[in-house]
Length: 355
Image 1: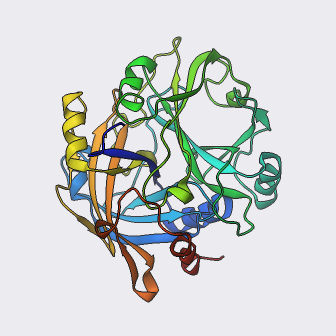
Image 2 (image 1 turned 45 degrees about the vertical axis):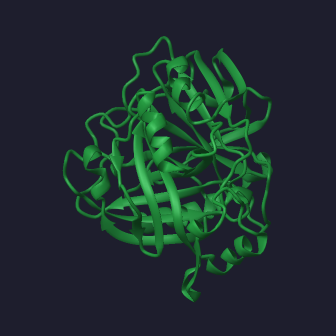
Image 3 (image 1 turned 180 degrees about the vertical axis):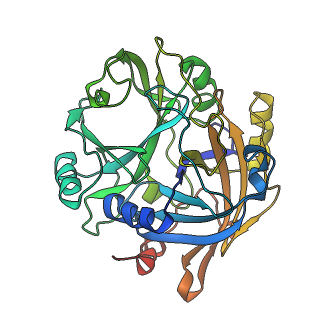
C-alpha cells in the first residue's frame, strides 16, 4: 500500500484450530521450531459471532513464534464445543487456506529430520515452479504444510526449521482474488504465474489435475516491530478450472479444525477500514478498540476474501517481551513501522520452551 496513514506490514501469523492443544503445540515445536510463546489464554471469542453462527464461543489460544525467522502461528482450541473437521474430502483448489508454507534452511536435511522425528505423511523431495526443492508433511489434524527454502534468518538456535513463510489459498477466480490480495493488501509482486500439473503437489488429492498457481509477495519491505524476524512472506493463489471447488469451512464455524485465518500486521486500522470498505471488503468483525489477551493488547478486525476465506487484521499496542519478568513493549509510544532493536528481539529467547 502507498499511504502513510495505513500500512500492511505483512503476515503476522496463521491461525490453526486443532483438536488436542498441548499435543499440537509440542508437534509445532518439534517440526516448525515454534517455541517462543507470546500468550496462552482462555477467553470468550465475542469478536467472532458473525463466524460462529451468532453464538459466543470460548476458546484457548496460544501465539507462538520461531525466533530464527518466519511468521507466527496462533493455535486455537474451542472449550465450549468439540471441533469437527471438514464435512467432505478436501482437494487441491477448494476455497480457503489449504497449505501453510514453512521456511527452512535446507529442504533435503529438513526432510530427513522430519522422517527421523516421525512426522506425519512426509512427501518426496520435489521442485516448486521456481526450481527450489520442497516437500510436505501433515500435522496431527491432517493439515498440509509445505517446507520452502528460507531466506532472511534472524538468529540460529540449531533447529532446522523456521516459522511460517505464508500460505496457499484456493480461490474461484485468481484475477478477482488479486483485486484484494495484490491491489489492496499489497502482495503485488508476482514471483511466478503458471498453469500446469505440478510435481510438488502430485501426491495431494486433485494434484493430478492442471491448475493455475500464482505466488505473490510484497514489493515493499516488511514493516512493524517484528519485521526482522518475520521477513518476506508469501500468498499463493490456486485456481482449478476443471473442478467445482467447495468452501473448506462449508457447514462449519470458526475454531473448527483447520487453517481458520490469515493474520496480517497492520498500522492505521481506521484509515485501512475506510479503504477496504470503499473497495467492497468492509470489516465483518471489529473489536473497535484494544482487545486484551492476557498481557497482549491489540485491535483486531476481520474481512472476507472473495471466496469467504477469513483474514484477520491486527494492530498491536502492547506485547510481552519477557512476560515472566514483567517486560512489555508499548508499541503506541514508538514508531509503529520501525523494527524492534535486535537486543530486545533476542531477549525473547528467555521465554523459549524446551522439550
